[in-house]
Amino acid sequence: MSEEPEPGDFDGVLRRRFRANPFVPFEIVRNNGDRYEVTNPWHFAMGGDTVVVLRPGGSQFFRKNQIVAVHVHETA
Image (tube, rainbow, N blue to C red; front, top):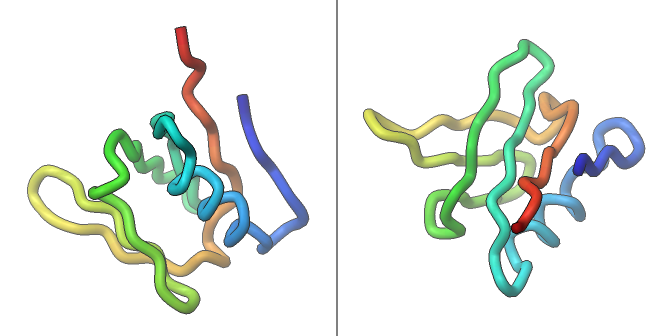
């Protein structure tokens, strides 16, 4: 399943995904094609216009306006 709101309006989508109870893993897709799996809510943070995803080997920081899609993993 994919949530694709108006271009550049991913703030609400990310907040809903982060606060989902139970948490459902999701993937953030950037405009350069990079993909970031968020499998744990503790590995994700937002502030102002920035997103942080913790990954093995380091953190990735990028701007919300670089997000083109948020894909929610289907639950069994």
